[in-house]
Length: 314
Image (cartoon, rainbow, N blue to C red; front, side):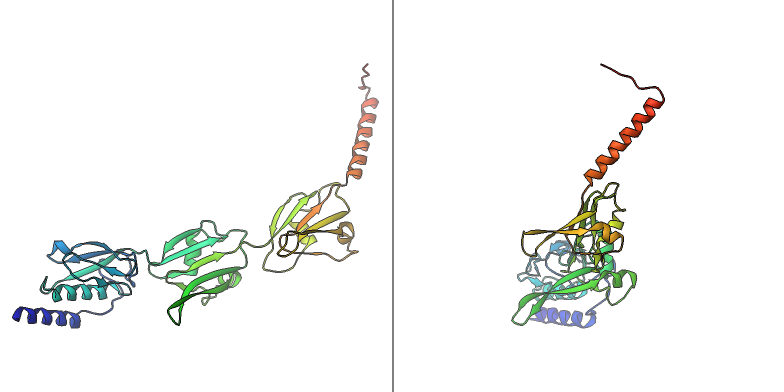
């Protein structure tokens, strides 16, 4: 009877004297934060090697120690709080009198953050310590050149009735990066999915100096003259008429829209706006090219005969 009383007194004294929450555990190799499922813990009990080991938190958030009859809830606790819970369990089952327990987190696996989309190095990592949106983008190597003007941050949120929903926050890239708005550099705690969509692109093909796909910037209107400037202008012998190929929304039907390119460039007709995924095709003026080729041959023939180098062959 006296032994049981001593054990109970020991547990109560430990719970009263030990702090409930500390910012960081001394000697921990990772910053102390709330424990979650699948985290790996290092548990050390002074002068009791049979209890000193690494333990993986179960999917349900519990840990099991040898010789303890009951599991111990670990999910949601700080390491210092779990130390008190483990010490109390050892006391209550009369395994150790006045145990000294130290718990550190070896690996966090309960706080994944994924960064996908138009970044240089998509990845998934654990939110260890203070992690912000800019930290996550930096770890992914930064945004790619085709990034859209918004970043989407998704996070699961519990609803009434223990249900789950997903909240999506839209972060403007310009305000986050250029304006350095601190309110947009949100803190991440785990379970977030950061998705950087690809910007809409306009494809320029045909008789231009630099054919390619060019992103639509900042959601603003992009016109024929603007994408021609990105394509470094028209190549020689371009046709006076170009074509826009546009696909209908939610359909595979494509429309061919002819535009008077020469009149637009001479400011005799308004510039034509383009939409994302439009194809601007500038044909080759074959007749003009054939005429110029013929003139070049004639000039070459005259130069040859004038120099007396023309050789007749049978």
